[in-house]
Length: 106
Image: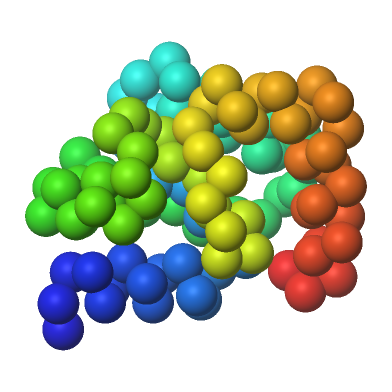
């Protein structure tokens, strides 16, 4: 299976997915850590991919999302953005509304 197909499958199979540096319990960058904190406030279940352990995903994900920094967050198969956008959506309440709508499926 091609890497891009693996990425598409990961996104399709997870309602909330974060591509991050490290893990939710042991993030390796401050932005991944902050993104995990926001997601944890909104829901108690989300998937993650540690791009430090999956380097081959990193370059292909750039092409897929057209975004060069991490973390990268996908919700309901849609690319949301990185930490700054996630933070903005959280502060405005939009993130909570989106997650509330899909939470019944988690």
